[in-house]
Image 1: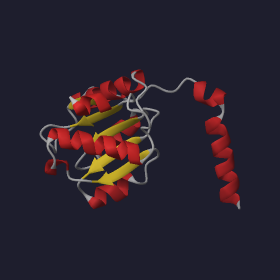
Image 2: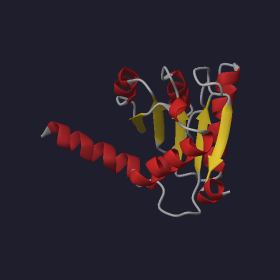
Image 3: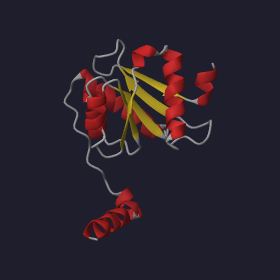
Length: 155
C-alpha cells in the first residue's frame, strides 16, 4: 500500500506542468569527445522534438553518458550483451534491447531501430524522428549521430 501511495505522489509531481517547466540542472560534461558527442546528440534530439533517443553501446557506458544528459525522452539502449541489458534495465527512462548491431548493414540497423521505436509506441507517425548515437567502428565511445525518419529509411 505504501508503494502505491509513493507511486501516486511521484506520478502527480512528474505530471504537474509547473514541475515540467522548472529549470533543469545543466548536464555534467567532462570535456572529453564522448561527452561532447553525447551532449550534441541530446541537444539535437531535443531540438527536433524526437520521440526516442537510441544509443548503441557494447558496455553500457554510452547509455550511462546519455542518461546523465537527461534528454527528457525515452532512451532505447541497444547492446549485444545480456548482462549489460540487465544492468541498463535498472535506469530510469531506459529501454534496453539485446541486439548485435554488427549483424546488420547500416540501413538494416536503422530499419530495426525504427521498428523498435514503433513497437514501444514512441513513434506513431511517419514524420516523427528518432536520434541515434553510436560508434563506428562498434565498441568505441559514441562518435556518430544519425537522425532516423521514415523518409531517410526509404532513401
